[in-house]
Amino acid sequence: MSERVPPIYFYIPQLYWPSTMPVSADENWKCFGLGIYAWTVQTYLRLKADSFPCELVSELPAEGIVLVHRNALRAHNDNLKPTPNILLICLKAELPAYPYAQLHVVQNSLESKTLKNSYYIPHWSQPALIPRNLARGDRFENIAFFGHEVNLAPELRDSSWEKQLKAMGLNWYPILNRNHWSDYSQIHDRWNDYSEIDAIVAVRSFDRQQLYLSRNYISKPATKLYNAWLANVPAIVGAESAYRAERQSSLDYLEVTSPADVISALQRLQSDRPFRGATDNRTLRLEMVKNGQLRAQSLLPSNITARWRNFLEAIAIPAYYHWKAKPHWFQKITLDRNYFTFNINRIQHKMHVVLLKLSTSKHKN
Figure (cartoon, rainbow, N blue to C red):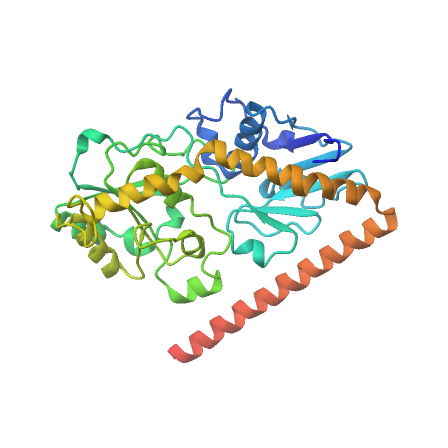
């Protein structure tokens, strides 16, 4: 990196500043269950521990590179514009892009191909994750979902689903969060605990129309899969773009498109027959766990931290000096153009959704 490192800030407005702050990103801090802190505080702590120069602040700096979570911009009523001396980087998460940000960081590699000036960095895995207890051995009994209640397919929230699993000799453990995006009080106490879990199911929807409208959830990350690999448990997941982008082999996860598919996948994992092509008579379940352990290496905090450093050094810092060198009139035109383009795209998308729903309704009638 040839340029001098400018001031780099992770910005959380005072309105959303947490009442407590962890010393380390490895702590089981409840606020890490909220995207605004999982992105901002955790990234800051990881970089700081790696001796990268950056600060966590509650007041908007006058100059430098400012990284801010999309939700935090609500404190500015979504009207915050970067000054001639600020490069604003929006940590987009699964929210709409911010029209005044010069750069976005996204959590789905496919979204970086459709959103201009966006860069993909895998989301952090669960801090203080407790992996499956080795003492469980070959037991296959407890099936879990870890996530927000609205991100679990309705069919898997129904009481009949738990009964179906009971009939198979399996227990259903939905570890559900029901919190508002800015409230950590209802984060489940076992959010990080996979010690008694034998497999996870992660399906947001079986509805093909919903999958299409969301472009296979192009803004969502593959975090549930990452956590399963790190926890040494096989994963059964929906047909989402983030999971498909990560797929390198059939052992990475089992994809399902219906509740019946989930039952079939569980039966495959429940079987103790040797997996075809496996060594040492391993079952499909054990082969998936072994594969997950290998895949998880690239997701260790040290590797994600290295990706953040590379992004800041190779992309953000040159972009900052490039922005500062532009005339003020050029900067204003750029921001206004971005805002106009953003609103045109948003209107077009809304019209597309309305037309599709009308078409679907017409066919049903």
